[in-house]
Image (cartoon, rainbow, N blue to C red; front, side, top):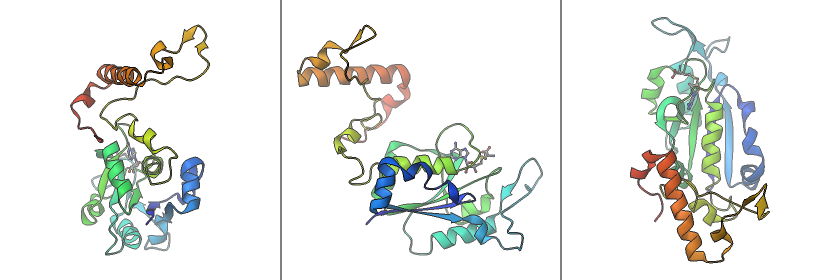
Length: 232
Ligand code: SAH
């Protein structure tokens, strides 16, 4: 069964965007995953096809209407649809590789992209939307965040990445940042590839990489050191 993504957006033309090329694009063509970009405006109720209104209590900007969004969510995710319903949101739980893995192991995702100041709280509550953030910064809309999330998920789907092992050795998969990489030429502007990597001694190479991973993680992301490894 392939991974089915439904994205609710005011800008369906942003999809598949970057996911239409390279690994994700080929997997989309091959049917490993599917993508349905749904225009939220089609679920507006009035003749002007309004999707937003001024914030209750005043203030700047516009808020996406709960009634319009609920109709769109119900269309994309009818009763019995087991896919999680996500809302891209800077207030959400930060996306992690662990959550990405869970999503990739499931049937797909229904993803709501916010715009303006965000969405009426009542649709989040009434439809049980899981708020997901891609980092502590503000985008102009949820679409780039949805593309980021789907990119991370799709590359984990069976058959998408040629070499499955490379996925397991990457940053975060073992709770550490990845070691540095080198390739030819042997010397670049006077800098050599570390001796051990051309020694042919696989045990020593593995130990060196592990050391480097631990050093980088300690220096850059000490917060990860208490985290649970995802594999092994
Ligand atoms: N007023 C809101 C920001 C709205 S940004 C606030 O201060 O929290 C408009 C939309 O962009 C949001 O509804 C959300 O869908 C998306 N968005 C912005 N930043 C994001 C982030 N870091 N992660 C995920 N989605 C984000």
